[in-house]
Amino acid sequence: MSFTGAPGTGKTTVAVRMGQILAKMGYARSGHVIIATRDDLVGQYVGHTAPKTKEMIKKAFGGLLLVDEAYYLYNASNERDYGQESIEILLNVMETQSDDLVVAVAGYEDLMQNFFNNIPGMMSRIGNHIKFPNYEVDDLMLIAGVMSKDLEYDFEPGAIEVFGQYIEER
Image 1 (tube, rainbow, N blue to C red):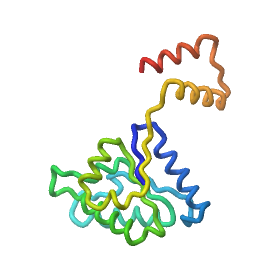
Image 2 (cartoon, helix red, strand yellow):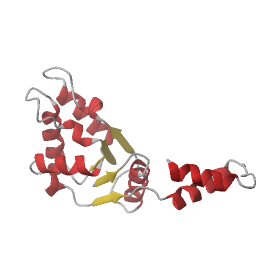
Image 3 (cartoon, helix red, strand yellow):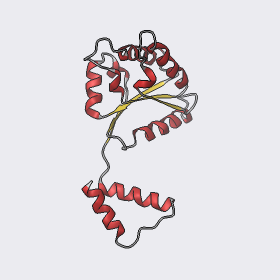
Image 4 (cartoon, helix red, strand yellow):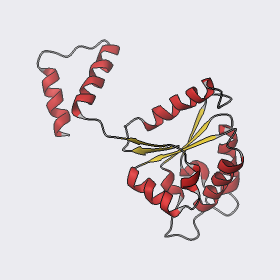
């Protein structure tokens, strides 16, 4: 899976829910989700990347591995970068062990598209691409209402309009 959008649009939340859904549907042994970044997967010296990547994959078996900001694994400007090794391991596991692991990649849409363009075989292994649009002011106001109610807060008269104007300006 590929989840694209700005931070705060719900990509990680959906990944966690997706893990639960896949488990309930019988496509995954458990509903757990392991979230990994470049720091979790790529080593800083020769021979360090493979064990780090394999350890994260091992933790995710039976569930979903979410690689957040996956485009940071690829660094075209540095041929000595170890991210490519991690990508190759992920591609191999996605091909050979797809029955026991779901891999999702997430990040900004334009950077993810560049990532897919530069990594042969990645796009063909991603079956679902989901774009997460930015929230509109009305959406954020509804969320604020639900959150304030859950926390047992009330907006003072006039405060909701001021808050809406604040969100609009931001």
